[in-house]
Image (cartoon, rainbow, N blue to C red; front, side, top):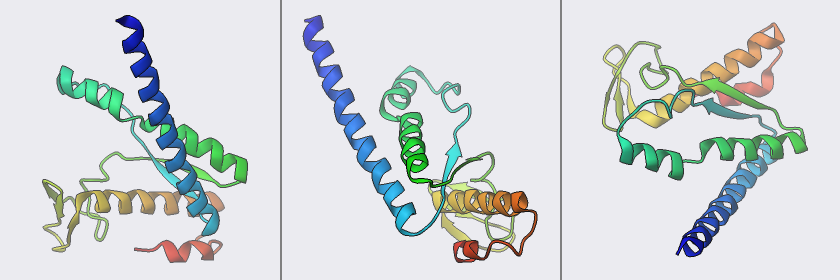
Amino acid sequence: MYKAIKKIGNKERRVINDILHKISRAIVKEALENDSMIVLGKLKGIRRKSKGRRFNRKLNNGFPYYKLSRFIEYKARWLGIKVLKISERNTSKLCHKCGHGGIRVGSIFKCPNCGYMCHADYNGAMNILKRAVGLVLHSRGTFDSAPELGRMKG
């Protein structure tokens, strides 16, 4: 019985790894074709938040974000594509248009300050993008030396 369970587990792991390789290859290919960098969110502490045994098991088994990010990083490095990791802290709480705190109701983000409304994940992604662009511009020491980043404005 143990052998059968182990065999099924190994097959599931191989299938997941295959899917992760395909996803990471597509992301890196997209970045290469568009002469872009890849920005990943740092999900620090996500596994430490206890939401119950069942939820934690699903999160740890069905959410191989770390493995996916490692696959993306090594494939990008192989091709000379820059990969940035940006903190996701408060990205879903702030409006990416005006920077004020907003309200999240389910998957919808609403800003009481400017009235902007969008999908909460889109808002968070745009905030991560803004942080990445700011980090790149800051590391270059000037805001004028990065014309290729102009197309990334949202």
